[in-house]
Image 1 (cartoon, rainbow, N blue to C red):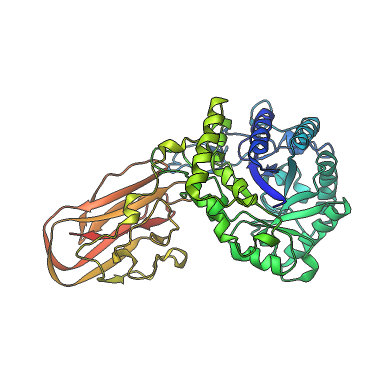
Image 2 (image 1 turned 180 degrees about the vertical axis):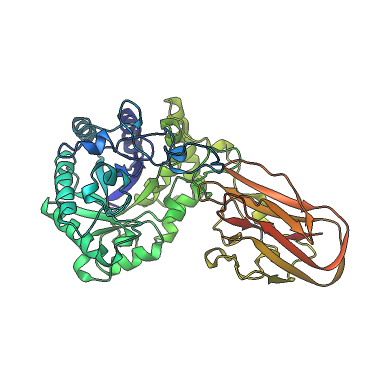
Length: 503
């Protein structure tokens, strides 16, 4: 494939330019040829723009070093000064940084000699809190540029002119994702930016939210992050397409059993899952511009952790992009040797030899007294349809969840849980256990209280970024029905529950 890429987000956490050189070297050694730099986002503007110096004087610096401390409001806010939340600073008092145009030109030239194209990304119109702070005249609200103003397009034109002068890539990425407002003007705004980019002699890449049904938009390159079906649609409409669907390609996820791993955004995405992208895109691969591993860095604050999260998983993108067809075990052995070599050079690559793998309960079917019982949802607020896990019988079907909350086995609630399980007849019960999941990144929290027939459950409760905690009731009961209630955390968010196991 022409585009065998890695995207690195340098906005959420700024990495020294030396780390980008290091990543270029690794990419060249394994057959990757495109480095997509996510240069701008709320957490920091990372490229010098001479026409708009406040983008870096203000937008490159924030009041907290770690993204999670800067972005998230703490659970306990009583009496705390929260003025630092999502606030900007300056080079003297703040955390962050940016790359000068000369630094980037030198990096681009080095990458070209290695056979790698660097594609810049400038977010538009959303993910633009730093722009709105530095230049409020182009702001619609605190987070989005105003796409009805001529000033906004003048701003983008001047920015993109400087970007194009530094990056000779045939492509410039202009974001376009997760825009919450101004919907009636959105597609026209994307077309306007596309005309600016094409006027610079380049092709515009955008995230898949910008995919429309209009043939006039087919000159826009679509980068698919949500689901592969959007890629198939974009190909049918005549677009060039880059596939990086998050379920396979987002490396801001756990690559091994999460308990004991460095904190990540969430999900379980081991090397084998990334490798399986080849199967998912088999119907469209001949018509694709390319594929890409993507790492957003909300929970990747250091170069060492960046290396750990990228390698060896990004190797699977090279494997697929080069259309190698060796079996997974053979590929994995090569990946072990490749990462051994990286570690010998001081690169903090994950050691596949120590891989723990999938949650063992995922591979077994739980047999217990409540299996196939009737479940009655007592509250009008039921499970989310996006996380139904199969519907009303999911909590007693014997199918236990993986390390992933979105594996169609964990049932998700954005309210308290209140169910009654009808066992069909009176039974003697000695033990009930219910696993709940916590992943702090996507705001999935352990329950504050779990009761069964009014009796509080004990738990092995942990307060870690990721954990699965089992709530148990060890008490003899003789009953036909079990009334299970779980109260959400004071932090609100989501409840995710696995099987209700009754013995």
